[in-house]
Image 1 (cartoon, rainbow, N blue to C red):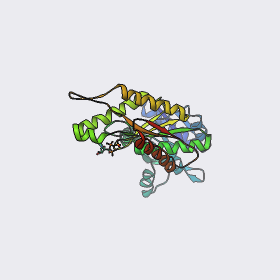
Image 2: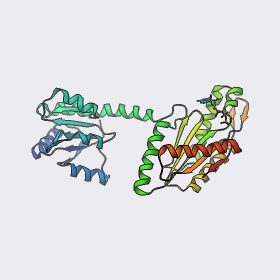
Image 3: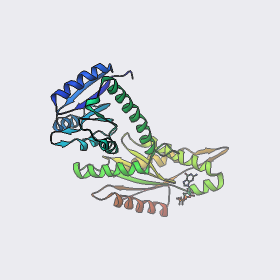
Image 4: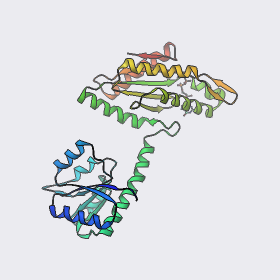
Length: 293
Ligand SMILES: Nc1nc2c(ncn2[C@@H]2O[C@H](COP(=O)(O)OP(=O)(O)OP(=O)(O)O)[C@@H](O)[C@H]2O)c(=O)[nH]1
């Protein structure tokens, strides 16, 4: 551990704030420390969003209530819970709720604290790798359906709260079955990757592309009017028109059909159903086209 650690310590006892500060210094870990003594202070700090932490040390008892609810405030950041409570079940209870580790304040020493911090950081690093993998489709490297559903749900909430519009398209490759049948399944895989790569060339940063399953993809365009989303999709089809898939000696032109909708004030399911209906129109009319609402 060579980089400086940014540590947030939350405790409502002035004495424990001082003790932790001294103990951290004695660990000899290179760090900077921010300390908060109330939920309000932590909330204000997190809302200002200009401070990112590598690790949080959280007092279990804050005033009259426990701090268990605060474990959710630090997604992706390991939280070590420190407590004066002696309760055998509490540690596993807190770990199930997302704590990285649990330590009794009476047992804390600089050596133990250093080890706890190192383990919490290593554990988080492994966890982040798993989380990252669980959001991605292994064939294309694009986001997967699970990630896309989560992001669309988030955008729907944002739409309600801030009236931010977004557009969404379901894209289905044309005639993949015939590539599989004539050139083999590996060529079919190559075609799926080719389409995925073509999508990445036309989107703007902030747009989300995901493999929905099989030969279906999703493109989500946050803060984007449907006309601009359509322009991106037409650029994607133009790219496919100009660039062929090469399999061995053979060249194969690829195309896709796209159903595009603007989000509106509806549910996730209704947005997907509307996009699917437009995709159906595209498939049954001409393929290689964008049909939008
Ligand atoms: N190679 C490969 N094929 C896949 C994969 N996932 C789905 N498929 C195949 O993709 C085809 C998709 O079916 P359809 O969408 O009905 O076939 P299509 O030929 O694209 O027909 P249209 O969508 O009407 O143009 C099926 O034959 C699936 O077996 C994959 O990961 N790799």
